[in-house]
Length: 287
Ligand code: AMP
Image (tube, rainbow, N blue to C red):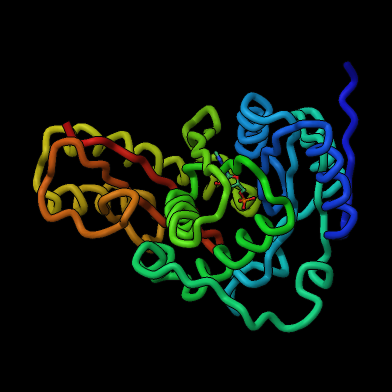
């Protein structure tokens, strides 16, 4: 069967399409993105195809989640390419609103998820997760999906969204999807195109560091020693500038005081290469 890709850029038209899918008895799976699609995004669509009857993807570079000195204006965009990837991955309906469509007037309502928004990227990017929570809630109101798919690549984002959904009884099931990587281990990201050749080579240190400390965590070595080990390893790459290297409990993102069997921890890295800030992480269950 030839897959057709519908596309709408207004909220009203999108709602009409989704209403028709619902009337046909279909369940709705939703994949929110900022576009410049790669196989990480496509993997969320494939998961959505398996678990829902009708797959909606949004492409919206959300100004609310960018700080004043961040890369909003130069964030990579290529809608033609995105349409091809979305179609091939199995999206039924693409939502491509303008900023004016999403925010016709100044936004005065903000969602703040405390605690989980505060450490890691919340510390380096003040207000970022308010912007994320607010746009995700707005998109949930527009699409009203049964299931929504998020990548573990942004593990703190998933924690924030799950907490918001629980706190506000949003009728959606959040599905976490694994990190998709390049062959050399670098986590796929729209921002990888910013890297020059040398930065791209050195960026593989993030994944190598995560792999390296796995056994230290499994064997319950002292936390401080593991953090130091991670920082030392990343610093072997001259272009790497560490923003953070931390281990927190997951998904509540509180401090790890001791290694407790059965608990999940998040090993999280944010490292700058030139002007590009990369994140990567690993979730482990303590044995
Ligand atoms: P973005 O377009 O970067 O906002 O990402 C949209 C969604 O795709 C988020 O849920 C991300 O976590 C997810 N995503 C981005 N990169 C990857 C990846 N390498 N593997 C899995 N999911 C990803």
